[in-house]
Image (cartoon, rainbow, N blue to C red):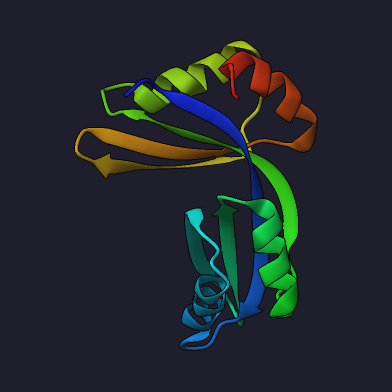
Length: 136
């Protein structure tokens, strides 16, 4: 698989940090037919932070509104490709060489020799990063 880097919509939400709340939110999105490219969540005291990269932003927004889930939108880059030593390091080097400061990154092995990553950048750096990363 050739490496693919694409600009994606990233949404975040805060929900009460209670047992079952994450399952409830994901169940509502599932019932609405929302497909997620990536999702993660974490505790932040009395609240939990949920992060979503939906396949289709409009469907996600509609489902979020219908279920009264308040979300904030930003831009990120989704990367997937063949796993190899330096896969993520090479991407970060391109950004560093262009003097683009990273906001955050999440990367995982996808199994069967693949990997995926989500790169977060300050809004002001997104256009330049898209060019540097040759994102679609």
